[in-house]
Structures are given as structure tokens and as C-alpha cells.
Amino acid sequence: MLLTEKLKQTGFSPSERAVIDYLFAQRELIEDKTMKQIAEATYTHPSILSRIAHKLDFTGWVELKAGFLEEINYLNRHFSDVDANYPFAPEDGLMAVANKMAALKRMTIEDTLSLLDHEAFEQAVTMLHEARHIKIFSIVHNLLLCHDFKAKMNRIGKHVSLCEVDPEFEAANSDETTCALLISYTGESDTTLRLIPYLKQRHIPVLALTSVGENAISNEADCTLRLTTRERLYSKIGSFTSNDSTQCLLDLLYAGVFSKDYEANLAYKINMSKRLDHRKSSSEIMQEKEHPFT
Image 1 (spheres, rainbow, N blue to C red):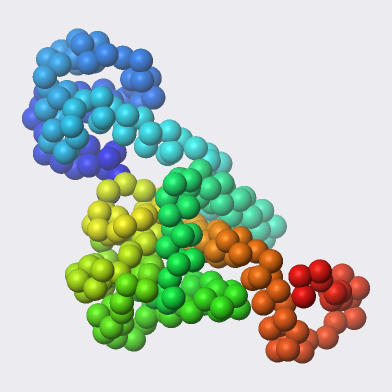
Image 2 (image 1 turned 45 degrees about the horizontal axis):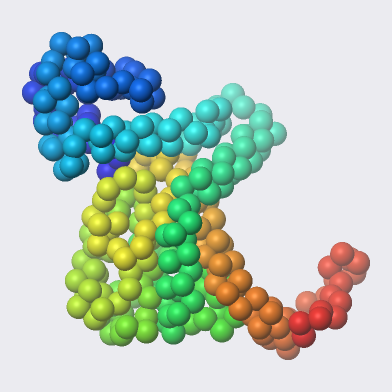
């Protein structure tokens, strides 16, 4: 759950609510304001600010303020012209729909990249690269998005399984050479959460792709990469941004693993394709040429 959502939902006293309302009114303008200045503006005491922070499990006001500003900064970026839930309107013509959908895809990729932490990404790629077997756990809808990732990884010799049938058995029947990849937009999916005890018991490293903010799955994962978090659960035309963000991260993970042994992976992939891909084309652009790595 996003911090901004917690601030709206958690039970607060009238004095605490006055401070919170001020935060939402001022947003990024609070960056240079001290506790004393905020307390004076809201006719409260600085201790109220500390109390709010502690209620939300922060060590103090400075940490809460930093988290709030970081989240506001994220929510302000991108998506200023297109609504992720309703990217086009009933009166839009077909080309207007097409252009708005293309703009949404561009913004989703930019947004996903802005959330990518270098250290977490490096850790995630290392986890997948070192794993003998990668098992992906998620709801069926997300697993459909993973077939292309599985195919690409298989073509460079990485064993990937999409655990749709009997995921509890797949989790329990794994060892430390397996990496579990959990995908959940909400981070609260019971279907996925109930697998974590099995994975932890078997000492299996867990990589999560999930939404921005604190959630149950990110709290349990060894490494977390964040998905674009702009959509409601069901009040929307389609899961455009969450799907595109998931596919973007999967492509980045594949590219990262590929780059770990670039020449060997490229040679392996091209040689396998030469043997198995029998497509023909009259287009000069599509014609294959000899490659130095093969």
C-alpha cells in the first residue's frame, strides 16, 4: 500500500488529521519546511508530527517526510496527459485511440524505468543468472504474460517453469538452486502469499515484481522490482500499464541475464535457431547473414 493511501485510511486524531491534510495540500512544498513550521501552520505541536510517523512505523518525522516526498515525486512523474484507467474517451476516433494507447505505452516504460533501482536490478539479474531453475508463481492472467520470457530464457539455456498447476507442490519441491519469481500487482494475493512459507523453508531465493509501496509480498521477498502503480483494481478499460510494466521488467531481466555472458548466449541462441527456425522471407531486411559469434 502506498504511504499516501495509508495516510488517508489509518485512524488519526483531529490534530493528526490537520497535519495530514496540510501535507496533501502542500505536497512537495513541505520539502523545506521544519517540524516547527508545519506545527505552527496547523496549530498543533511538533510532537504530533512524530506521533504520526510512529503510527506508520517510521523511526521519526524525517523518515516519513522523505518517504512522502519520494512518493509524491513518483506520482507527479509521467501520466500527466493520459489516464491509466481510461486512456481514451467514447468520442475518440480510431486514430485518436491508437495515438493515446501508444502514448500510454511510452509513459509506462518511462515510469517503469524510473522505478528501477540499480542495486536491486543487479541483485535480481544475479539471482536469475545463478539459478539452475527459475519458477514463476502468479495468477493465471500474469502467467500468460510470462510465456515470451520463458521462451527467450529457454533459448539461452535457462530453465524456466510457469507454475500454474499445483503451485504449492512446485514451491515445496524446489531446492536452493531454484529462484522463485513472484508477480503480483497488489502484493497481497493470497494465492501467491501462501507459497512463501514453503519457499522460505526450502531456503529458495525470492524475487518479486510488485507495486510501489509496502505490501506483504515485498516484505517477504529477498529482492523486489517495482511495477508502474497507476491502475485501479477493476474500474478501468484494461490492465494496460500493469501488463506493459510487467513485460518491460521481464524484458529487462532477460537482457540482464543475456549480457552476463553475451557472446556465448548469442552464439548458442543463433546456432539453435539455425537448426530449428525454418521460416523464409523475400524481404531483404529479414535475410539472415553470417554472424561473427557463430
